[in-house]
Length: 329
Ligand SMILES: NC(=O)c1ccc[n+]([C@@H]2O[C@H](COP(=O)([O-])OP(=O)(O)OC[C@H]3O[C@@H](n4cnc5c(N)ncnc54)[C@H](OP(=O)(O)O)[C@@H]3O)[C@@H](O)[C@H]2O)c1
Image (tube, rainbow, N blue to C red; front, side, top):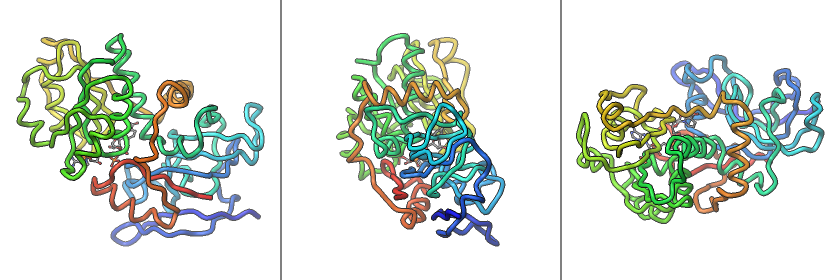
């Protein structure tokens, strides 16, 4: 019987507790592909799952991890054979299906894509769901603008976090002039190095615009915060501009008025990286393997399963900078 190491979150009296345990592959759910996970990554949602957030995971004990890259060990599906390297992100992985913070997962074949040539396993998980979401946001903005983003002014919120930092790098690569919004005074120079031309605090953002509609400042925005930050972004878009929103670290609700939509033709584009058809994910991964290739080495810290608990606590407090790569080898 094959056993493997996994992080397990269990319900405690007041809060969930985390431990590293031995599990058996026989305890994994049914599925077409048994995958030996080599790398995973830490996303905000993983921290919610690990800490017992009922909106993410219903059943505990549970192994979180919404991202995984690794090798197929067993396949019931003709599209995959033993030894293939695959990426799995989203769907139910790490939510109620045992996830990438364990050395093995078993999943349906239609959750997996082959690792594109031109992308390493480390690169894939340095991007992870955060990178996929940044990529989907930028694709949505490009489609909406019906033009390349070169020369357009953009604003990115939560910019030192996973989605935000990769959005800054990608927008910079595509030639946009970026304003990065951050709560971290100490990271302004890091954001400039990633490609931001201007770095402002959340308070400065509030001073630059006003509700319900302020000066038109940006052609597009990538927002992971929601709440009052999203209200400000919507109030300060240029005519025809749009915000791609994917997150809610600042709260699930926001206020707006109809004015930006009917007076400036602005749009709010919702981004889902989880349940979309596999082909859409594949397109973004292919982009990251070619035209959108980024050097993420300066943005990523590598930890083992043992090092994850500290990182989970940091991301829950909004304190992460860049990405955390999880090495399961
Ligand atoms: N829709 C999807 O498919 C999808 C996919 C991935 C992620 N998400 C969501 O996107 C959000 C970000 O995910 P992530 O993995 O990038 O998380 P992350 O690495 O923790 O980044 C979030 C960043 O937001 C800022 N922030 C934190 N708390 C804040 C607050 N109270 N008010 C304003 N800003 C705050 C911080 O950056 P600064 O200090 O620089 O401001 C933080 O680093 C989460 O809500 C996540 O669930 C959604």
